[in-house]
Amino acid sequence: MFLRKGPIGLALCWLIVACPAPAIRALEISPSAQATPPLAAIAPPPTPVPLENALSKAAHDLLSKFKDDAAPGQLELVIDPLIDGVTRVQSAATLLEQQRITALIAADYPRIRTLPFTVASLSRKPLVLIGTLTPINNDGLPTGPRDAYRICLAIADLNSNTVVAKGVARALPDDVDPTPVPFFKDSPVHTNDPATEAYVRSCQGAKPGDAVDQTYTNHILASAQVNEGIEAYNAGRYKAALELYQNALRMEGGEQLRIYSGIYLSALKLGRTQLAMQAFDRLLDFGLKNSDRLAIKFLFKPGSTLFYADPEARAPYQAWIGKIAQRTAANHVCLEVAGHTSATGYAGVNDRLSVLRAAYVRDQIVAEDRSLAGRLIASGRGSRELIVGTGRDDPSDALDRRVELRIINCSS
Image (cartoon, rainbow, N blue to C red):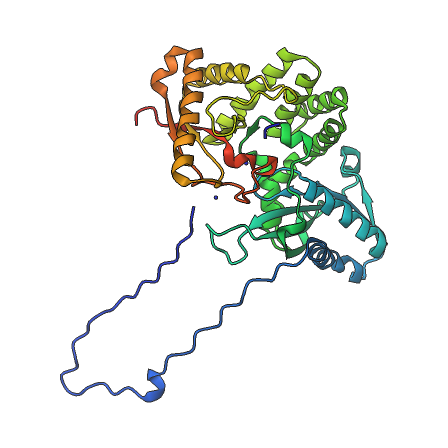
């Protein structure tokens, strides 16, 4: 169904100060003093290898500490599902990573016993493995093609609340399938979620010995319950999924985008439209509260400004529009409706199409509440603000074809 940072420049500045010559004699400079020290060689970027080889390297680097550790006794470990480092979703590739890591532990690390990622398992204070799989330009060019994936794996010790091991590698994109799993593919909204952002920081921004991000640990019990809900939803067990999400909402750390999305999606699948739209309200309020922008996964007909009618998806676009109007008015905000496209096609055409789609969504919102006419503007960003940037033009990079709601200053 439907399917969430600018360029980095390096400036070299020379400061030249003119000094008066000494009155008595010229300063004599020895040949050795004139010699310019050689510049340190810049190390080339790591060479990406096939995904299986890259994952094996990262996992063994991560786990070898526990194989060589002289401390006696068996260790228990849970895997908090790996995610895409850009879109923050679970994908076919991250699930494959998790399966291979589990098999590798069973084969080569008998001291480690893996447990399911559940609330019951977390009560035993196990080690927690987290990880991201991130599309990058291997040469570090911000606007270059995403020609590699960076694997980041880390293990956190909940007893000491520290990151105790880390493994990294780079993989070729050929074997990576970034297609989102059903729950994330169906989710209607994408925005910054503090719990998920803390997960990413705990892997990508930490080194062994660093403290685990406190926001991550504050949300981990609810996240375990969410994971059970995601698994139930992916398996088509929508009633069980709904109960799990509702239970997670009542837990400490239950304020999460995934929980509101889960309640919305599961209720919609069960035909409980009123409950679903109440959850959509909460989704919008959560996004407006935690970020200055909210990506709505509207799907348009190719090359058109008309919504694509997907009978399988059953996305009630008009109901979404009505809720966006209601929550915008209730939150007393002004919005820029920004359209985006993938990089496929001509830049000029993409720019025009993106602004037309944004204007269409803006007009639909204003039609629901005329008082919003002076509080919404439309703009088109074309393909200048890609999030994924892989150019696949499939559900895996749907965020590149998003419509964003951005909070702006009403006085501007």
